Length: 322
Image (tube, rainbow, N blue to C red; front, side, top):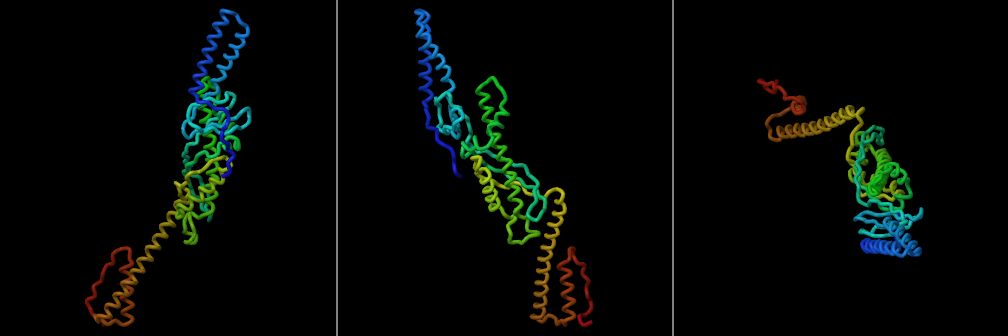
């Protein structure tokens, strides 16, 4: 995936060193203020005012990053790179530091109704794991910032407001992933039949596809999310069923198919047993049967072996010659 992300190469300083210097500036302000109060020096007054303004401005330059977090650095509308180094730092206070999470996130997509390859309405859902791959595309290729800003609102606590902005931004990304995953799921589901009842048994189906279907779904999702700088780590179909309006009919069809398959096995076994019985009687010379008797015997054995219920025997007290 082609990336537009750049590493931030601007000014940065260890936050604890900067904090020490910050305290030194504060001490200088106090000293100059005392001198001004005693000597009423106008130059020192202006210098102390400059230091005081600088002291307040420096507060905006502090930032901290935890593992798998990043900040997109923007200087008056111009992208300056992405900061990913963990720790406590001081950077240019005039940079807009947009915080992002690079951690993996789960998304459980609710089952949606689609038509499979042969037109049957089905319900299909998926679960996927995704994460940000390209912070530039995520921030500036899709309109995530507007959606995030609308969820922040106005607050008095600057830190809390920043936290809401990050959460809103990530929720906007998640909403984008959800919509694209619905579209990819419809595309993949429409290429295959639900099962092989009305298709060639050699053809891949949603029920039998397994890993191959999941791999195709993952590929389609990555193609759709590449423009937003997102990557799908794993995607799996976690729900698959016929739609309620045809579920009962399809269940009866599956039951009928299972009954036919079972009957085929029963008849195959019964014919094999009848054939074995005739060979045994003939080879061991137990009884000699003409073609009419063999046909009657075959008919009786097949009825007994293929019947759903136990047959009621009729004892023949006569002879086979009558």
